[in-house]
Image 1 (tube, rainbow, N blue to C red):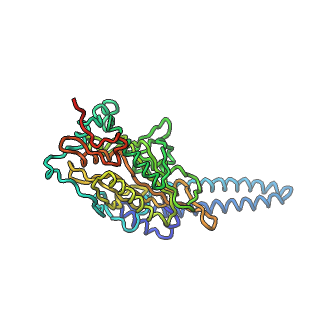
Image 2: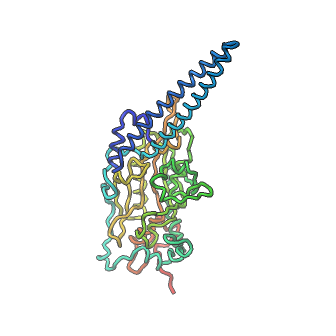
Image 3: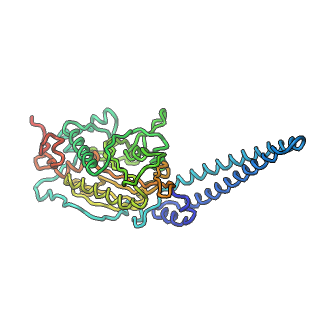
Length: 425
């Protein structure tokens, strides 16, 4: 949610943000009009109520026939106050609905345009030259099935397309990866969390995952609960309606959870293997910081993500995501994309977003200032590891004999083995 004071003083800032996203700037005008109507209705209500109170004192002082005559006027005035109150409530709701249609304001410097208008900031690591090594790389789905790391056929039999079983060393590889992420996060000062994966509508909406993202979310109508696609949602709701203390620095959490996404609109995209699936596990970083510290924290989260990719020895690049691909809550977003040899391109592994005060305003998460007042905090999030990383690990670390080399940081979770190889007959 955007600060209405900002919209009143500089609506063009929000219009420019909408244009950068390729979205309709008329949404801003609708909010400005709704805000004016709301303030007008509120003044009318307060004026009527003040008149009612003043008239009530007059009635109390009156006697006899005069008092009886005034009582009828009091009743009429009470009806006017009730009507004005209803109009004020209606105007306030109209304003709330208008404001919720506006995404976060894009941070200055973010690329304009849509999904393909990102800017590559850097490439780190050198993709392997498999031709020079004398063999053609196999896609992750072929490697995973041949090494009995996952089973998509039985996943589809049990749950439908885009579901799978991680089996044997595949299950242990995911646990090793996510455990390493959680251990590293704890060493970096994050509080480890196992989060709920079902949340109430106000929390889902507060984080910005409803509205234009409705078709991506699983909903349980019998319980009026949503399955989350990231622990960001539960972590953002953790301090809902609270005043938190940031005097000692940011509050940082690392959430491990199952994640659920409908992947609507992705029909025929990445249908093989486990790259784009309906259910996966992820460790997500989440930070609550002071507004003026958000930019620096965003770069810090990005550095943590890059260090994780380097730790498992994947070549990657960092992109500055264009405004039209930011989503509702983000003001700026950076993605880290790992090289996928069989596709000959980089694919997203992590994403970190600066949501400024957008989520905190919706969820009423504030901090106490020096003068005793409160103000919204800023929230940020970033992927630390996820099931999808297995696809990049298999493809980049495969060997000519069909085995897969295990990065040293993951070996403790796999019993110390250096290579994942096919079982011998």
